[in-house]
Image (cartoon, rainbow, N blue to C red; front, side):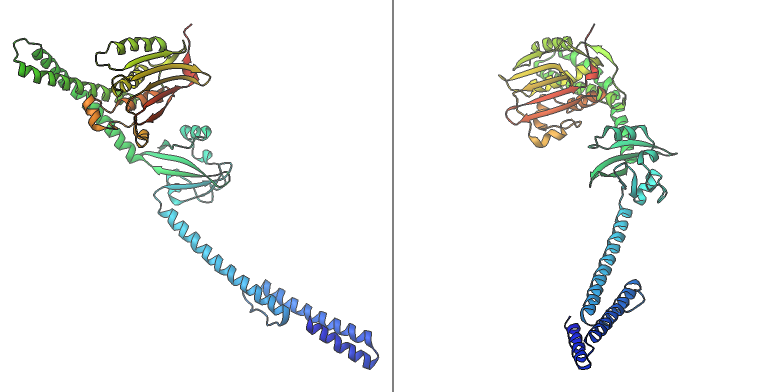
Length: 422
């Protein structure tokens, strides 16, 4: 601007001298405009071909513009280089991951996947981009998992190949409507679990026969009147321990049966109020019961299921409550139905359970207090049996407990299982 004013001033002076004021000013403005247009041309040509041309050597405001563009370009080049490095590191990282990762859009269309996911799911890079994941991974269990919309736990599917391959698939929400599909090969875990189940089932069946023989001989000897009193005391302890071992073996066999059967429980009518009334009589008749027991039946409806499995659920929960409720305490069993289905709860005023133990209560052989459980004869299998029996009936269990104040175990059964005898 100062230069332009200086030029116009000189043009005005020349115009005064020559008597051509307007012509000199217009000539100066035209020259300034042509010069700026030329500089603009140089800048535009450099911006178009900046990879091959050096920046023009301009002064004034145009030089400042060129310097600013050069700084922006250098910053952009730096960030682009850094971004390429990050992308390269990300690809190396995802390639080294032991799990497969698939990035899905709002409509479950594939946006990206790592090489591990391509190998495990049989995906092809670029060819499968944009296709829905359920169109490429055709599995009824995976489709049900997607339709259900509950992605808290993964679903395990069997891959149809020559080898016995099991894949764990889990959706993870991120961003705005986007999802990650995490794929893991759990074939080894499935194989080890199957071997463990077979071992437990076979060992339990093999132990049952010798235990029966031992218990029979111990009962015979303990009831013999000619046995010395000191020996009789030892025989009574042997009888108690053999009965305890027999109970553990029976629980193992029951748990193995439930674990090996993945199908739904049958839809056979079970008179739940009547079954619980019979159990109430058995509980009241127990000689080792030291607490008060109360049963509240608020519904005449029964259930469609397996009576033996429902009996295991109810008896395990009631037995645990009585076992861990001290003398003078109270245990209340309750059965009711509502619009959401059927519900059975057992509330006690026993010792309670610390919060850190609650998530693991249904694990087999897990004990909150191993010393106390051994003293009371617990096997650590009761709640595992309850969990599997509930799963076969489409049910679930909630546990609320506070140390020193007692616990409440509540079983929930779906409405489809609730029925009333005609």
